[in-house]
Image 1 (spheres, rainbow, N blue to C red):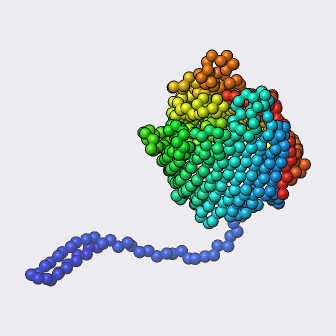
Image 2: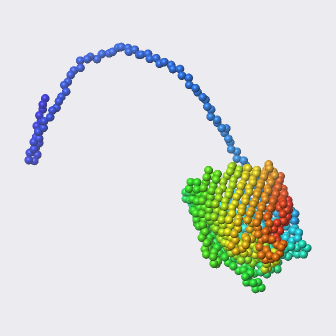
Image 3: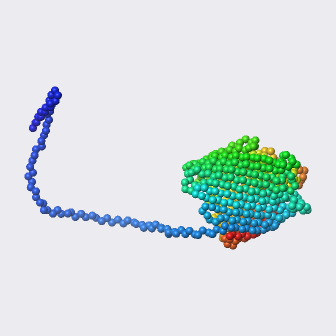
Length: 553
């Protein structure tokens, strides 16, 4: 069929739209089948599956189940805060020591430590050499939630003789040629600490005051009543950021020194009234990069009123961990300025005169080497170095105010080229052995030799624990190639030699612990009975034996 539509749309002005299209219509039909019920049983087919005979090998594996463990926390050992040690040896040498410390406490510790040793014997053929040495120390530390406060104090009293004079007829009185020094110092420190969060600015402040003086030295006007005041103020700041640690160390040291400053009978060059201030600043950074560790910074020292220019010294170090830490090669370059005082010089050589010139020592050091472990029980370290030491104090015999039985100080620029090698062995807490060899070839600028400094030093030590009852300690020290300048003053004397000889000093210590509180000990010193010279004309005692007991309470 064909349909035509005619549409007419009226609007403004009139409008007509005609359209033609095909519209097919599907034909219809009628279903003629009738619905019916199909009542037929459909048989289910019988499907057979053949059985395949395959034998598979099986294996039963039982995982080992470790036995459960119950950790038993043993009761803490009882602490005995008190300790006493008493002994006596040949050369009439008494020994005493007392120690008392606080027991376990979460917030504070404190203690006191006293020591005394002396000798009233005599070395045949020499002036009287009796001496006594007493020290005392008190200390304490208190911890709050954020701060640590600490304090300590030290006391020293040392009496001795200038016995470096031959006296085969024993004509020198035991009360002559004596000297006695006394030292006192006290220090305070305050710091914070990281309890849980280590990413914070850490700091530590320290201050210390030391007073050291000598009593009248026999009849020498120039050396009596030498006095030394030393003040120290220091601060440290550090901050950790990932693999970097930024740190700044700063300190100020003030040293005051007097000796016969008002005695007009003494020449001006021996009347001392000096003041030295040393300011130190050391910023540096420590960085870890894979197996490397780097430290880089600088030391700045300002020394006044000295005419020395400020010292700028490096602070550089690099380490590499190789073979999972078995071998660590390293190299470093650093330096420092050491403030010399009457106290420090007297402790190096107590036979010096009371009036000495003081200069600070500048040290520049380059070192390279490697360290590591050979096994679980052995470790080693080997290195070579070059040092330049400006204003290094050297001790020479005094000929102006004594007949060579006292020493004065000269300063020199000394280069040292050498190396150090050490080896350690430790089998748990039973046996410990370590040895060290150090060699330095000293090259002084003005002096002929680096007086009294050994070029070769060897030390061996061993500790052995037998059933926690018998403790054995042994050590041997060797020093060689030491020179004395005595021949410069009297080269015509055939009895005076330049070489001070080789020192071989062996010691043995035995201790039997009856129980945890009581023990007995026996100490053998200078087993070889070598009467060597520690300083020119200062011969040491021969074979020494010391015995005693200890008690804890």
